[in-house]
Image (cartoon, rainbow, N blue to C red):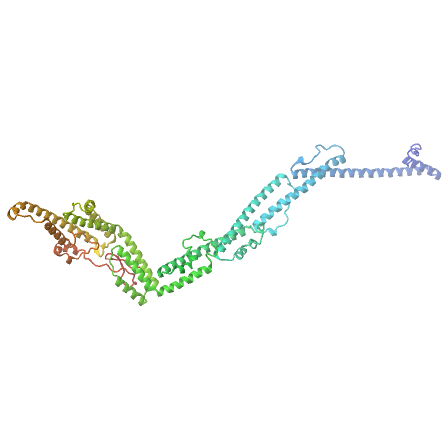
Length: 582
């Protein structure tokens, strides 16, 4: 005991043995009993044990804490690797070997690197999600109400980040498309406002304040509500443009009609070229700024109203002008009218005030339209009548040519007459077919309309019937003269023996011509350009044809003029009346 507890001079420091030896020396000097000494030694041993116990407990606690730290570190490492989704990003130890502190020292660098990567990844996610949230807010129209996006730290993998970036790219494309559409709408609104003479700024800012020109392109609203309101605005402006154009075209038509009625000078018409230039334009064709402004339409309305008032004061002149137009139409289609009676009726209607000027003009326009329809329906037959009359003229010329005894002499132009005679014979041979065709078509025309087809007041069928009878009589006269000549030729030798001479050929020809003239009331029975039939004017043939003409007694057509509702209706052709429009 004394040896172990002795002071070690080599170490130069106090140990438990040296202290115990010192304590023994003190007890010896004091004279402590062995019992007291043993008691105190036991106490010292107990205190030493307590110290060891505490140290052991502290060591155990420290070890447990280190193990917990190691466990937490491993769990954190596993969580970070799982969240980041890529183990190859850091050097993670494969196996847990060595002491606890060695294991912690091995994991710490990986953890530190993963924490740094996590922070960077979270920032990337936050940036992408913020942009996504912002664009979604712009589309929804509530971008200012959104806060910072929450990043899900449980999945920070590159795959997830790529998904967000793809979504962001899709949203950016949609934003670009929406922005392009917004700008297109705004451009359309600008053009429409220019054409309509409206304030573009107030119109477009009423849809959304960000749509004016002072706002940057990227700051303009692209929300669903903005696009919807822009589409409605464009639709409303297009409809307004369509209505204004229709109104302006109506006014332009009225202006042109009134100008034509009153023979307005070209200088005065040019004052409204900006109105009439769009009379046949489509909605898309009108792009000139101010072309459909309200003040322009109002200006045109005032001019139309002024011309209407002027038209009322010039009603007689305008009505007579329309009557002249109507008469010219009837003259072209050989329909007889009474122009004087028509003008008197027009004067009476206007002076009486019983008919509105516009109603009278509309009624006359209706009569003109019906007359034009009549022109179209009579055209084919009239063309055939003209050809027939031309053929009849050639027939008359051929008759005169055949009676000319000097037609074969070598005089100037004889060869031309010979060629004309050949053509005339060919044409004359077609006359019966012409007549038959005209009769058939005229009957079809009359049956379809229930009225008589007249030519200058004379029923065409009666004219054709008269011509056929005259032609037949002329053929009979020719046969009679031929027989008479044949008989005369047989008697000539006897007469020459008795009287010594022959009758002159010129005298015989003169006799033939007189007979033909008497039979036809004209040259060779051919119709003139204005034929008329009256039973009393046919002389020696009245007894044979009275019965045929009684059934088609001729009456002059009534005058074609617009009258009031209470007056008799105007006639468009023949004897069949065409009612005036109410």
